[in-house]
Amino acid sequence: MTQPRIALVTGGNKGIGLEIARQLAQAGLCVVIGARDTGRGAEAAARLAEGGLEASWVRLNLNEPKTLAAAAAHLTAEHGRLDVLINNAGIFDFEDAVPSKASIEAVRRVMEVNFIGTLAVTQAMLPLVRAAEKGRIVNVSTSLASLTLNGDPTSTYYSQQFIGYNASKAALNMLTVQLHEELKESGVKVNSVSPGFVKTDLTGYGTMTPQEGARLPVQYALGGEGSGAFVEPDGITPW
Image (cartoon, rainbow, N blue to C red; front, side, top):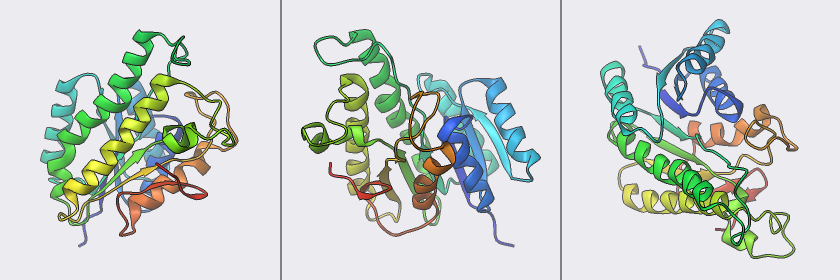
């Protein structure tokens, strides 16, 4: 009997992350929701399970290395591999702003989670991803990470100047580029995916639902041979 593919979705207890988890489970994957909060993680997994989907949860705080090691040990014991890693967890800080006005502490918090935390969880899970037959890593990014669009006065994103958040996601894109290069002989595919302008607790506004925003990350998690790309719903995004 064919074993189901295993997927870990960080920050999978709400918003886009929960919808990514739901759609992956609907596609037949065994989904593990990574959540900082015990109650929210358990509740999210229970909601999916109530719908007949195979889902569980694990405590995962990108700022607490011991939770990353414990989660990796749990996945190793339970499954021995990780077919899909969705690096979805991230924060936005409303004290972030243009470079001259942004709170340095806010910028530090955002960078610690969105980049350093994501790098840390990726390092923790990489041996499991390498153990999969066709490993996939999807870094949930944003068009605000594009240096090209940030510097283009005609771009919709030109006026959205949040030095901490934009820089953290640009750094995340660098992780995609370098992981792609490091893993290109391994069969593991790595991509940065911008879901689109989704209304979530993180943004508070947007033009897409979380269900719509989950579609592209799920598409790249489920298949395709491409790697090292930065994509959004309209196509390739310039770095």
